Length: 379
Ligand SMILES: *Cc1c(COP(=O)(O)O)cnc(C)c1O
Image 1: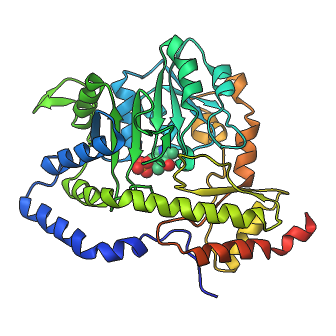
Image 2 (image 1 turned 90 degrees about the vertical axis):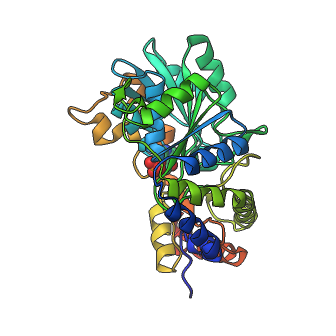
């Protein structure tokens, strides 16, 4: 019984060793290791791919969110609506800039922000909605813009998991006021360490983002804004630019494997629901719902059979100690205390292996192991 890893970058990176080594040598010989031409070239390539006018390379996806929020002038006294079911960085970035994260519930079928719940927690202090394109699928941007636009609220895309995803042909990163990407190794466009990107059609906002990433300076030792060290390394940018031409083929592999899972799960006769279909989905994660309270038992069974899985995410954000505990930044409002759809998702969601280089045979075996779970007889 061979193990099936939850994630393995070496399968697609190993064949690129020669070209990546060449990139490393180029940067080494340039002697310029932070920002500079390599970062500018990467930014231009991303802007072209995403079809958005401005792209600003930063140090991580979390920092992309901090820069985007700061570039909007969001801070103390402001509220920012986030889904309760996402990676914590979405809301931690809001708290970092001194604003208050306000949590909204998600839609059961898509795991994405529910516009009705967003509307219920919107107040006069709401400055932005963070639309998270969770698992590689775009949030319902039309409905969110319809809520936000009349109130002058910004719609910030947390596109950390969705490089290359689209909604009706418009790519993530070009769908909101500003887009925030992570280039962490597991993301769709994964680097060789930490990295991030801020995108926007607004040139003034992009200029503020550039100033913010470099300690608030436009010219050396003259600090216009309270920024940070949010710069992207030249080596990271150069390696990522070499990965970009491979992205579409890798997204096609993810979609192909997802379709295979969909078909196999549909005929497996088990109480596991596949993610609902969506044309622009990039399947950064393939997340099923396990019914009958069996998620953790199924996960343990799969682990014993050598199949790696993950739980994204085991606790909703509105109950995390940093947001809800004593002295936390955000005492929850009445509307936030119970977010039942997000809470159910934390008990039922299970991410199955999906990554470029995973084989169809492996997907077949994962589903066969799921079908063989002895716990089904007790549900
Ligand atoms: C990965 C991720 C982030 C943070 O990105 P980092 O590069 O790890 O800082 C933010 N939001 C979501 C939804 C993510 O998945």
